[in-house]
Length: 82
Image (tube, rainbow, N blue to C red; front, side):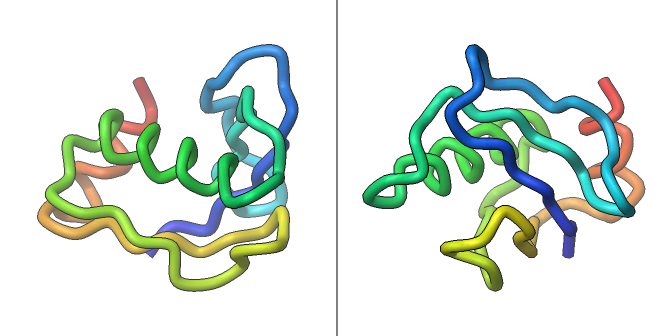
């Protein structure tokens, strides 16, 4: 489980470090029709190389919780630190 703080509508998509105990992610997608959420899940899937990434809380909030399946917490931290 990863706590994520999302900033939609950014100029480019990237992981920007940590914010208040959560992974801060800037997304170049608007928070409309689930576009930012889909981009977030795709980014985390690519960065962690996980089998599955699922949004479990915060679909309409900047603060979200995401489950990353198929890798250990240590692997997830290593991939996200890059």
